[in-house]
Each structure stands twice: as structure tokens, then as C-alpha cells.
Image 1 (tube, rainbow, N blue to C red):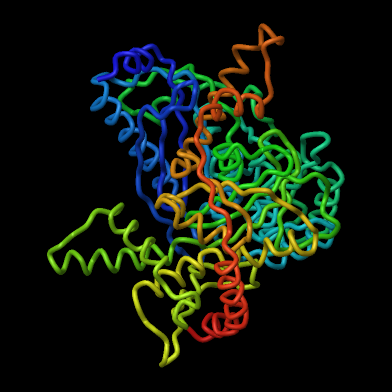
Image 2: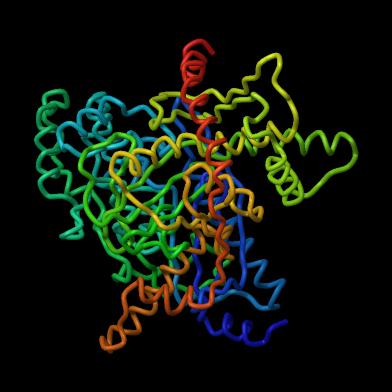
Length: 544
């Protein structure tokens, strides 16, 4: 038992970050330097209901309570104390999606997650109207599609937000979002650090043309129903008594800790990799995969494959987001795990993934002629409205475990590669290094090596790489706590970037893998075959 850590937690100095990922809700307790003190988690999975990818409200709150209970148990088991007080708390979640509420605070339709690709019409209209790419998963695309569909609930909307914004609202009573998360709801003006006012007016005008379909019952203006935008360090409220009971129904956790602005997985990923400065970038790989590049200047054109979002402090970021990454890898791992159990030789999850990932490096450069498409859902980057996971091989292919895993890892990054090529080849964006984080990088070296080959750039991983967004939002919460302390003495205030560099990452040891020419050429050859085979995936969505 470490007495210093025990006393630190007991005194209520620890900071908690909770992130709602696609398959896991994770909680990380840290100290002011970002060191992990305890962790907890809860597995969950989205459901396809009436052709909508969703999580129920019960699943959200049961999952949150289960995750917090697991964290509390970790604290009890490790330090022999109960977790009663927190210094600060941060909530993060899957970006985008659609959660509309009426004046009574009731959810009007089931949560529509980022994974849904049902807003093509709205996305196309808004992109053309705004001269700004509006991806299908963005909240404003979901809202406008509901308008186009004449959905009855639209006239009842009093507020709409994201998953992270919803949870934060219930914990604090504040209807706010961090600017990075808000930039996935509606375009942001990085100069004003707020929603783009011209586009807000354009949207209201568009909605106005549909009022007859609703018997003139749409009374709201878009700015009235969006969350308030906050930048990192802004006051985002405190944990209320009701909020504390939502986290911990036992009543052990006390109210009163501060909360940072809720952020999405993009903002927490940038924070977790210390890549919020201009000309830095990161790759976050899990159920979905996305790359973030902080820009020196705006892009010259609008690209539907590239989103424009912001850092947690409001700087412009080019984001290549792909809906599919590790789901198919997880499915194969589950199959092999089932086989191992049937043989009577079960292995742990970590052992299994380590074996499979390392096996991929033994695969042939051309994956033995195998090809996979990991599309569990639609993939806008490649123009797929729906997904069908596919494994393809020729009769003369070398169907080995090594080649299977190599093509699975290649496929996990293939759509990202296609999007990133637009930035590097058409916009001449140059990067010295990308920082990788998320489960794809948990096995040492393997994910890095594949990413370096795919994107032809050195890839760096920090010791916190596998901690991911829960750790990132905990760090943002710690920064909010720091800003609160500095409110009475502005001379001590430092920016988020300074805070990350001087406090969180000052002693971090990084490991970098540079691309190898032969591996870059092998991935480029793979991507050409991948691109040509997309017609097979398209046919599968049509006939299967």
C-alpha cells in the first residue's frame, strides 16, 4: 500500500475521467501529474434497432454506474479506502450523433449514434449550402434529416446534444459542450470560438422552408437549441447532489467537485497525445479510427472525406474519420478465443491479442493474396452507405494465420490511408510525426509499424497510449482544476499546451518507429488492390 497515494485520494485531490467508447466505458483516476491511480470499466455494445444504431438510456446510466463501481472497487482493493471526494471530473464520449429533448427533458427519439449513415440527403444539402463539409454523423445532419423526413418530434425539440453533453448536463445541470465536441455538432468559427453565425442563419432559413410540413409548429431557432460552447479551462459547472447519486447510488461520493467542459474522443485523443499545437497530429484507433492534424492555414478546397473540427482550445483541425477499425479484428480474436477454450487451453485477452498482432508481422508483404473489408457499418470515406465484413481469397492464396492477421491490420487502416492521402498529396500538408493512441497500439510496436507503413510518417507512442480518451479527459479535468486555482492569481496561468508540456508530459518517454521503404511499398500495393475491390463490398451491401 502506498500511503502518499492513499492520503491523496482520501483528501479528495484525485481527478476522474470517464469516457463512453463504442464497446467500453472506461474510468481513470489520476493525480495532478497525470499518473494513473486506479481504473474501472464496463463493457457495452450498441444495438441495431429499426435500422438505427443506438444505446438505450438505461444502458447509458447502468453502464456509467457499473463503470464507476468498478473504479471504486479498484480504489478499495488497492488502497483500502472508499472513494468519497474528487477534485475534478471530466466526461467524454463518442462524438456526433443525435439526442433531442423536449422542454420536460425527455429524449424524443432513441439516441442515434455516430455509426449511422442515414443522413446522406441532409449532409449533401448542408455541405453545398455552407460550402463546408458536413459529414453524415454530425449532429446537425441528423437534425436536418429529421426535418426533411417530416419527423413529428422535430417541432417539440427544446435542446439537442451529444452523449457526453447529455451526461454532463445530468451531472451538473449545465447544457454546455467543449469546443472540440461542439465542432462535431455544428461548424465552429475558430476566431470567435463559437458556432459560425453565418451558417446558423443559413440553417434557420433552410428550416423555414419546411414549416408548412409541420403546420408552422417549428418555433425554435438553431442557436436556441444548441449547447453553449466552452473552451478548455472554462467553468463548466460542479457535480450536484443528484449528479453524484447518478454516479454512485450508494451516496458515498460527495457532490461539489468541478467538471471540465465535456469533450469528444477527438479532443481527448489530441490531449492524450500532446498534439494540440499547430503541425502536430495524432491517430486514434479503436472501434473507429481517425487522424487529426492541427493546421497552419485553412484547406484550399472542401473535401467530403475530411472534417474540419477544432482542438479543445478552438484551433482548426483537419480530421479524417473512418467508421470502422478494430471490430473485425475483435471478431476474429473472439473466434480464436472460442477455439482455444474448445481445446481446453484458454488464454487471456492480452495474451491472445499480443499473439495475433505479432503474428501479423510474420505475414507476407502481399498478405498472401488475402483481402478483407472490415465494414461493420457504412464508410463515408469510401462512399459505402452500409457495411458487410468480407474476407476474400483466391484459390491460390496462402491462407495462413499470419496473412489473415496482416490483412486485418492493413484493412483497419485502409480507409484512413485513402483520406490522409488527400491531405498529404492534394493539400501538401506535411507532418514530422504522428502520435498513436488507443487499443490498436496496445501491443508494442505492431500497430505503430503498420501505421508508419500506411501513412509513410514516423509514428510515436507514449506510455499512456493504451489509456486513451478516459485518461485524456481526466487530464482536461485536471487542467480545469488548475485554472480554477489560478482564477485568483492570473500571473500563474498557463495555456493548455504549456500545461501539457510542463506538467503532464515533461517526463514522458516516447517510442518512435519510422517507416521502412519496403513496408511502405507493400502497403501502397495493398491499398491499390483494396481500392479496386471496393466494388465487391458495394455488391455485398446490395445483395447480402
